[in-house]
Amino acid sequence: MYYRLIYVLALPLYILLTVTSCTSCGDSRRKPGTINPLVQQLDETPDTAELVTLNSITNDSIYVLSHTRRRNEAFAYNEAQANGMVYGTLKEGDKYSIYAQGRTKTVKIAINVTELEGRWIYNQAEFRGIDFNNRGGMSSINTGDICFREWKLLNGRLYIYYVDAQTVADNRHKYEVEEAYIQLFNHDHLVLLFKGQTYDCQKYIKRKL
Image (cartoon, rainbow, N blue to C red; front, side, top):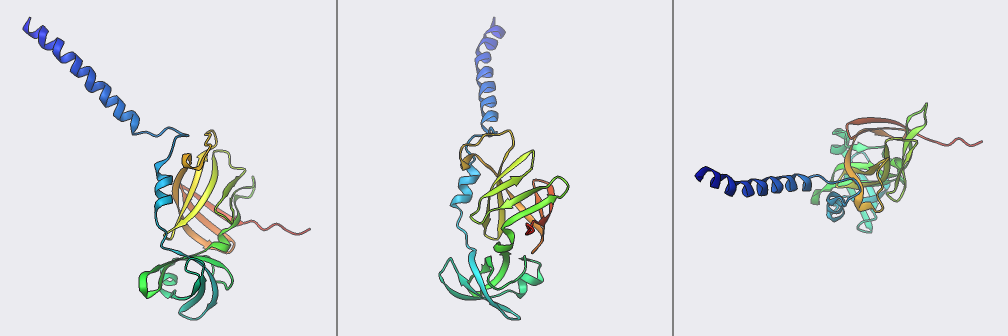
């Protein structure tokens, strides 16, 4: 009788713990098409990089018009160039995202936004690629398993927003987002590591007839 009483009292507690455990496991996994808190987190993260237009270049400095601060500024770029952190070419008239160190105006990362924008093809035979639009929009070119939606440069890093081909996302807060790592970038060649896959791209330039 005593052991039966212990069993009767313990059974509801066991059921309660089991249900609580399953509920916690379910909450830790975000279903496709639900709100992604990382999107909002990135939206609320201050961008300390500056969007600039390159006016002129010397041996150790670049002179720019800052769109962020609306004034002319000078930055030292040799350190970034030596560290391989100047992505794209340095070209007068092009737009750049400049991530620099405080008051010293020493460039840590520079990304040529003008060269990044446009179509990049990573599979020439099937004409598969990525289109970086000039306002942060993004689209896929004949990609079957992933649909690119947006791109963002934030504090010297490139983030890509996307959805799986079978997922319906009726607003951007339901997108997936991950950092894309630039491994090589010049005016006609872009190599990205994204979601464990290497995208070795060539710039698409439409030939005039």
